[in-house]
Amino acid sequence: MRQARIAMPALAASLITFAATGALAQDALDPATIDLQEEFDPIGSEVHSLERDGRTSYYIDEGTGERAVVFIGGMGTSLEAFQLTEFARTSREALGLRFVSVERNGFGESEFDPELGYSDYNAEVLAVLDELGIEDFSILAISGGGAYAAQLAAEVPERVTGLHAAAAVSSTLESRSEPECSMSMEERNEDNLRWTRAPKDWWGVPGSPVLAVPGWQTRAYADATRSFYVGGHMGDPAALSHEQALPCADDAVVDLSDAPFPTFLYWGEEDSSVPVPVMEEWQAAVPNVEKATVYPGEGHTVQYRHWDQILVDLAGLSDNTVICRDGETVLVPNEEAGDAPLGLCAWH
Image 1: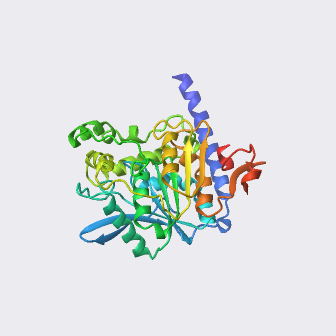
Image 2 (image 1 turned 120 degrees about the vertical axis):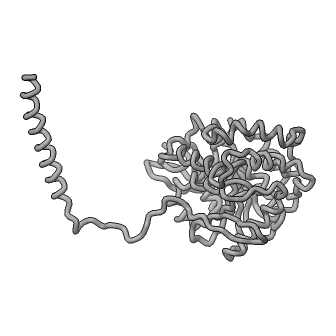
Image 3 (image 1 turned 30 degrees about the horizontal axis):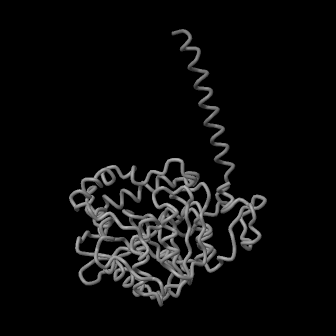
C-alpha cells in the first residue's frame, strides 16, 4: 500500500505533463494556416440506376475523359470490382479515361432472372451507354468477364474502339475449349454454396503482389459481399450457377473473325485459373491482336498488378511502357523499356 501511495503522485505528475505538452502542440497549430477542403473526397463510385422495360439496371460512371471504357469484372463479381483498380485513380484521370460498369444479372443489386442471357446483358449495357450519350467505347474484361466482352463486341463491333482481355475466359469464342455442361443447375448450386456462403474464400488472393496495395484485400471482400448479399439474396448461389452455365446455351458462341478493332491480351505465366492456352484461343479467334503479353511468374491477379499498363493502352498509348526509373514512374517507348522494373514505382 505504501508503494501505491508513492506511485500515485508520480503518475498524476506524468498525466499533467502529458496534458500540458498536448495543449502546447495543439496551440502550435494555427487555424488560419489550415486549408480545409471545399468538396467531399470520393470514397467510392456512385451507383446509378436506369429503368428500362420493367427492369432496373445498376451502373457506375466514373471519370470525365473522352475515352469511354466498359469495364466487365470477373465471374461472380459486382460493379464494386472496379474499385479494386482505383489505386491508380490519379493515373486514370491523367489519361482521360471514363469507366462505365453495369451490374450483371443476379449480382449486387441486380434482380436475378434465370431467363436472361448474354444478349440481355448487351441490351442493358447499350441502354446505359445511350443514356450517357456514349457512342464509341473500349471494352476491358477481367477473368470471367471475357465471355460477356466477346458477346458485346460481336453485337456492336462498329462502336468498339478496342478489346482488352486480362486473364479473360474464351468461353464464347469459336476457338474455345469445350465448357463444362454436364452439371445440372441443382448440382451447380450445391457446389457453389461453398463460395457464396464464405465470400472471403471467393476473393482471397494469398501471396499475390496486389496485397501491397493498402486496403486492396479488404475492398475485394467488400465486392464479394456486395455480389452475394447486398440485394438480399443471402448467399444464394443461383446467379453464380446461371453465369457458369451460360456458355452452354445455343447462342453462346460468337464470331469475331472480322472484328475491325484491335485486341490487347494480358496474361500471367503462372495463372492456373485461366492459363496461357486460353490466351492462345483469343489469338486464334480475333484478328488485329496488337499486344499479347505474358508476364513471367505472375498469376491470376496480373490485371491488377499491371493495371497501370492497361490504362496506358486504353488511352491509345500502347507504343509506350510504364516503368520505374530512378524512383520515378515514367512512360518510355516500348523498345527503350529493356529490363527496367515494370509499372508504378509503388510496386517496387
